[in-house]
Image (cartoon, rainbow, N blue to C red; front, top):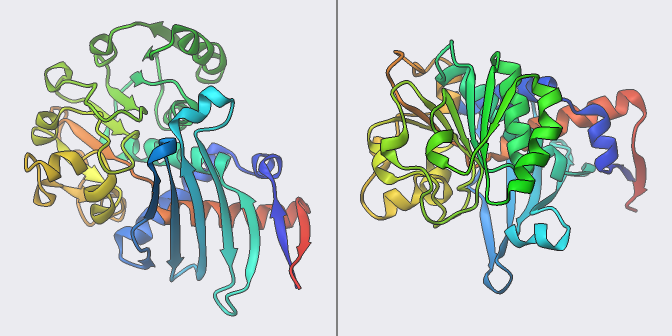
Length: 326
């Protein structure tokens, strides 16, 4: 018996943002309709190394696909010349349980997370949104902006990050892709003067103050993906319509986790899950004055639908290698 092995180059050869967004939106919809099995992420914390390892299994009943992602998050890796997030995805046969494919999940994770941000903006941002503000300019910021460019006509991107050289590199790479004006600033407050704000930092103390956010703003809060992480001031959550990817997972490891554990916010204050909005179970944005927040922790079903799409495209194109198991 053998399985398909896809390295990062193979995955990049068949995965583009438009197709990732289609796949991820379908995954969210089934999640919103309660047609998936998806236990919460399990974590191993490596405090000595400022990192963690996560396992993310899922089964989509209607599509009859299953698999698991194993992924790390080590923020200090960038100083070592390594990605801060590295992953593999295993697809399994639901009939026999046998592994069908093992593929690089690092690029896939960046793409499916970016896709979720673009989809959230599609349903939660004002239709006339055209100014994007970005706090953080790492790999995830790139795919977030790429996905937003699929959902809206961007006229200006405002960026800020700790290292000015990183901001310059981000602009150089993304300006030809998005084809709009870029404004670099050292002020997060200035970046918040936008229609859609994207935060992609691993901080444990809020960077974005409630008073800086104008009516009608949509926020994609991406960076908080583990207990104790928080990018937005808790008081901002209280005055916003908060949509999460998964209530149980977000409550323990999303942007809302610190505010919930401190008693400032509660699960009852969460408006909906994104899948419910996509499936029409709950309405999304209802007026131009609402502040909306998408709390993205990253769901196993996002990985599964994206990996399944990559697998079938690779089979069609004859991409990848075969690994004999027994």
